[in-house]
Amino acid sequence: MTLPLIGILRGVTPSEAVTVGEAVLAAGITRLEVPLNSPDPLESIRRLAEALGDRAQVGAGTVLTALQVRDVHAAGGRLIVSPNCRPAVIEETRRLEMASWPGVVTPSEAFDALDAGASGLKLFPAVQVGIAGMQAVRSVLPPGTLLYAVGGIGVDNFAAWRAAGVDGAGLGSALYRPGQSAEQVREQARALVAAWQAAGGEA
Image (cartoon, rainbow, N blue to C red):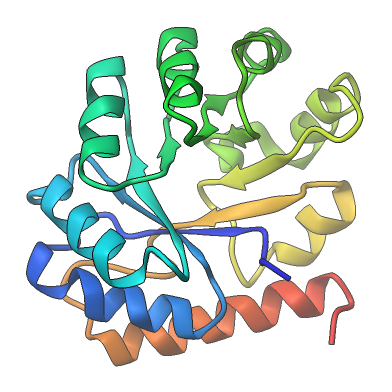
């Protein structure tokens, strides 16, 4: 079963992308995003897609335009994550048969994203919205809508967010920071996966 977690490799470089990606994948996180404000992100995505594409869903974060969506697709990416809700970005993502995870805070943004065809919703920044805010948004979403919390969620608060009804999470600095070794990232990924599973009562 695929874990409902997205590994965010902000700041990763092409030379280390595959070894870091392998470390995250070894812990059980099978969705990887390279934010487009990383060094040479399309090359990192290309290398990750070539090396891990049959075992992981690789793509980009901080995607703001339809042109960027096309660039990521050309590099082999199949996952588009944004910090905001832009229907044109979502529609282009879905036209290219990629997974679309736009950022939302309000119900208006959430419904605009779903109307445009979003695969799921990224509640961002989760730390600003808070659990009560997330529950208010969640209460009006159609049944089956996937809602992932991103920004300020990790080992210390997985249990509270899961109990409150969030479906998954995006993991950023708790998973990877520029300059960390693959071994460091592997250990951090394992700890995050273990904490997520424990928070849900999973074996």
